[in-house]
Length: 382
Image (cartoon, rainbow, N blue to C red; front, top):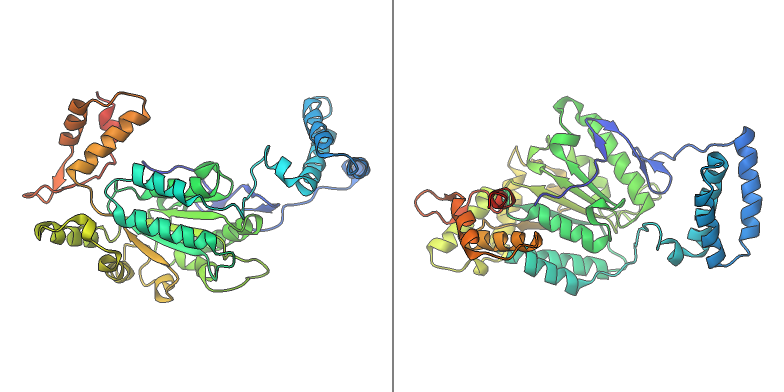
């Protein structure tokens, strides 16, 4: 269940314009003016001052009416729409946000809804459910956090890391991963070349600076951290630290999520020890794994966080372990996928799909080697 979103920039080339008038490098967007267009803007400005005396309903009709006649004089109308939008956003923000996505910086977290989603859709991950719920609830309830919330999710593929990031995004911004305020970076796509690390660092800083300026509660997700070239992620260290502001921008309400397969072997080793001792996986506690994970990832050259200042300065708030999935969890994934497709759950099909998966260790066959990652594709054959 891999999360998908638009690409902030690709192959070392920054692109796109962020909300709030900044481009992907964080620089102010150019202002057009002068000549005929400048005179048109002056006319529109006088009209908008007059419109300032109108009510919300009239302002909305101005916007809709302008849209309707855009085909007749696109340049003038485009300027008028822009000015009218600014007027509505300033004077009637609630009305504006019904027709356009707003940051929702002060939007409270529905902790009950988040808990229900995690418990009903995330299988076999009691630690992740507990930590994510606790961390997000505490962070969003704090009106003046001292630093951004930074979560590092670790475990083998198919255990639910991407799925959790998707759930978190949806609970913080209505459009989830499609929101203008949620940004997904994939290491192999956005940072592919080792010789361009300095360029990537500069672009990453500019992108984060520009988007947090536009929306303080922006969410940044870094997927495939274990494939990220060492040193790149340290570029965001200032944004994760305990600064009240940096160059006039506060990053304290932003959220950073790292997704990594690194540490999966350490998590599996601990889970196997519990299983072999006849103990329930639910008995595994965060303190059993968190320190082992942080040290293991710090010393792993292929973790993306190798000797990272983010760990050295304790700027990652939680290392969240995702346990390997057992046969019963795979069957739960199959049932959930069938319901999502609007298909009646057929236990015979559920069993057949689960039995097609491969399990490890070789002799004990306890855990699915791909988690639930291939459930969707395998179910399509039935």
